[in-house]
Image 1 (cartoon, rainbow, N blue to C red):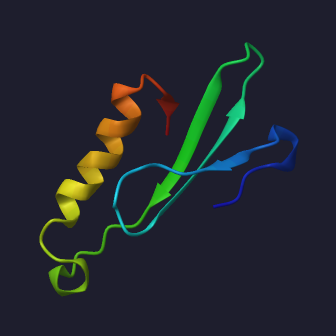
Image 2 (image 1 turned 180 degrees about the vertical axis):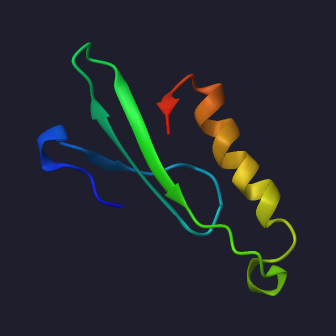
Length: 71
């Protein structure tokens, strides 16, 4: 993930067990944190198992339940 340096992005972590994702946030002009993330979900079940889809849902649920603005 690349983020423009003028945004002064801060890398952050989520509590989910999803295997391949990276997140950061920046503060907009209204002092609201905006979270940006990249997730890779492999279509190959043998790599991470059949629960990978549910783990991705956990990522979305964690961000949504905390009312974070995210992309």
